Image (spheres, one colour):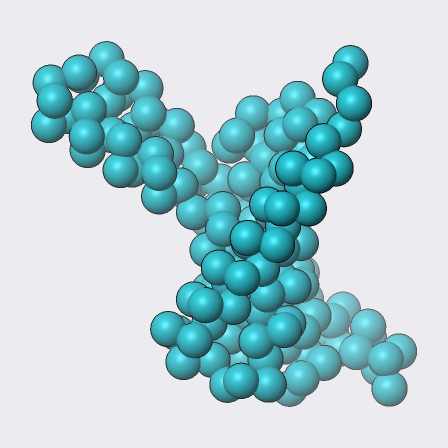
Amino acid sequence: MNAFPWGELAGEMAAAAVGTAAFSVLFSVPKKYYVLCAACGAIGWLVYFCFHWDGLSPAESTFVSAAAVIFLSRLFAVWERCPATLFMIPGIFPIVPGAGIYWTAHYIVTDQLALASRTGFEAVKAAAAIVLGIIFVFEIPQRFFGRIAKRKE
C-alpha cells in the first residue's frame, strides 16, 4: 500500500477551509462563526479524503463525510446557541459534486453520452449520499447534543 499523502491532504484541507469560509461570507454567516464554518468544511474534507483513500467509493465517502459535517454543525450550533444551518450549508460545500455535474453537462453538449451517463450517475449518488448523511445525523435526538454542550461549560 502507498504511503499516506499527508502533504496533499494538508493542502486540500486548507483549500476546503478557505473555500468554506468564503462561502460563509456569501451565505451571510456572522463573522464570529467563520472559523467554525471553516473547521466544518476542512474536517468534512478530511473525512472524505481518508475514507476515499482507504478504498471506499466516492458515494460512500461522501455519506460519511456529510454525516461528520452535520454532526459538527449540530454540535457547534448547540455550543454557540445558533441555528445549525449556519455551519451545515457552508460546511457541505467542499463535498458537493459540482465538478461531476459540470462534466455531465459538458459530455451531454459534446455528445459523449456514455461519459455523461457515468459522471451523471456518480454525481447523483454523491448528492443522495449527502441527503442520507443529513437525515442520518438529524435522527440523533437534540438532547444528545445538549449533554455534550453541558460538558463544555
